Image (cartoon, rainbow, N blue to C red; front, side, top):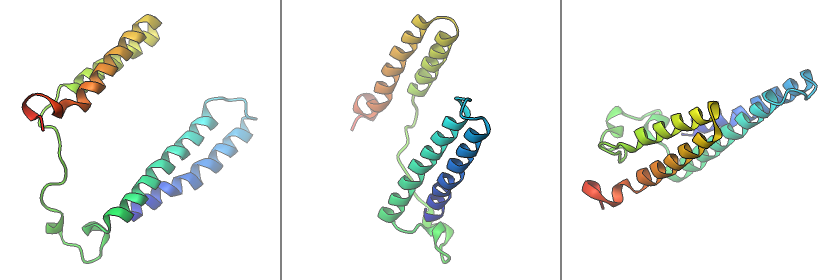
Length: 133
């Protein structure tokens, strides 16, 4: 994971100078481009630091070592929901929210309400029903 972390951390050293050059070329009057480039640098930094600390905690994976074998990565990788309707609920809430931006703000509030319900349902999916723990 160290290679991935350094790739993302290298994005900071790329996107910040590009954002500065973009801002200078537009005389800091264009308020979408250079803030977006600075935000991309921030997001790359967050992902890079997360991967770096995860690599320190977990240790080298088989694909990080030169003597790693394919069978070392076999088995259960994680715990995933066997089926879930909550992502569909969140996608519908996002669609309603974007529709609200286009038509009227009152529809946006319905989308936010549906999104809150969808997020709560997805987070607590394993607390009730067939898959409760």
